[in-house]
Amino acid sequence: MRIGELAKRTGLSASRIRFYEAQGLISITRRANGYRAYSAEALVALNIIISAQDAGFTLGEIRRLMPGDLSSWRDGALLDALRKRVDDITAIEKRLARTRFQIEALIADIEDRPDGMTCEANTDRLLKPFKGIRLAPGDKVGVP
Image (cartoon, rainbow, N blue to C red; front, side, top):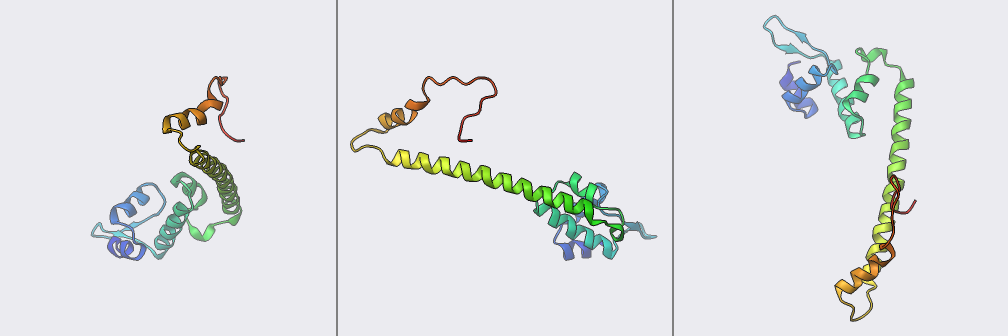
């Protein structure tokens, strides 16, 4: 198939398809007239690339995981990469949960301002626990 048809079937622009080709992620053949000709395997490979990028894989990771010939694909390396991605997502979720907790606590502290207290005084009240704290190089601020 030609690049226009491949672009239509994948939803990718022709320039994006040529980029993936230049990155060695898909292969082409040239017709006698010089036009690119893409196989059905290129369509499959592009759909895999799109899905992998949506899952957070970099092009370098995709390149390492995808064989040149999709029929020779072995699932061991793919399973390892997918399991690592799940572990990465779990770590991000934990970090986001801690951050959400900290932000919600800060919102509650700000909203629990005593009646009649000015914003400036409330800021001083909230920052008081942090004044005078000196961090050593490499120390991290926040909830562990």
